[in-house]
Image: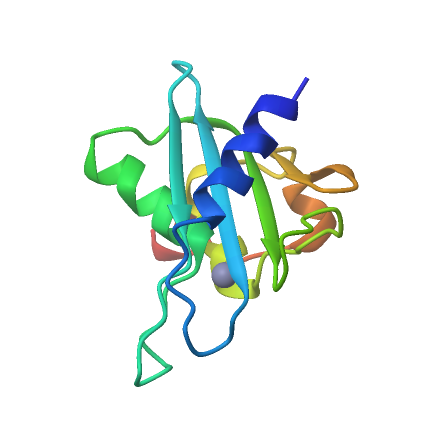
Length: 129
Ligand SMILES: [Zn+2]
């Protein structure tokens, strides 16, 4: 069901700017209206300014007015073999939690997970009211 989305994530990883780590990551974010927003990791010589593929994809979608998502696929590897799962980092999970519920599907190389599998609780907008 999510094969096409995962393939889009692998394709996005080809564009990774990862000259320092050599670790290519691609993300493919499916919106509820059926569009796919891709992102890759973009490293920086200052290291701390590096942006992950997942947040790149989310911010690309939001910048185009899309904030409702159905799933995200993530592919990461330091070789051309993307068969091992690449788990999203805590920052990306927090950003995903801004727009997606606990049941949001996260597709990795070894199968489908839920956002709550990696981030069971999170800070949210409910704390700010
Ligand atoms: Zn991340």
